[in-house]
Image 1 (tube, rainbow, N blue to C red):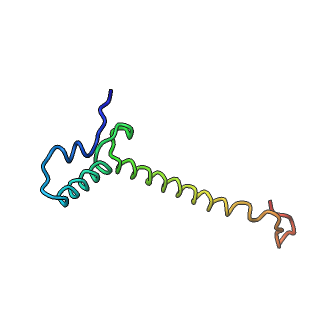
Image 2 (cartoon, rainbow, N blue to C red):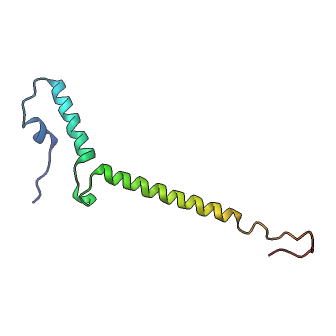
Image 3 (tube, helix red, strand yellow):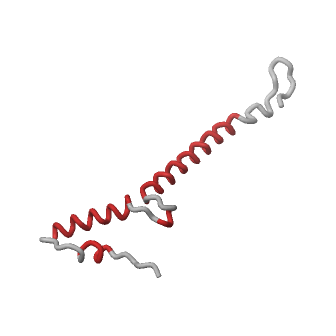
Length: 92
């Protein structure tokens, strides 16, 4: 059985806070750590930030490749149906 994590148990009950502001700051720091810098087994032991950066990098690369492919396709077959002025023959 895998132990579950609970920010309140890990953060609030393990130390003494003087006031609500201190609790809010500690909570903000813990949430930032949890969302950005902790390693995660489901992400192949990478941080959530690393995983998101990899996603956006691959998405932008994929989008760039699609854009280039579309640009190449726009120049293909543009001369079909035209005739050559000099010979009168139809261009392929």
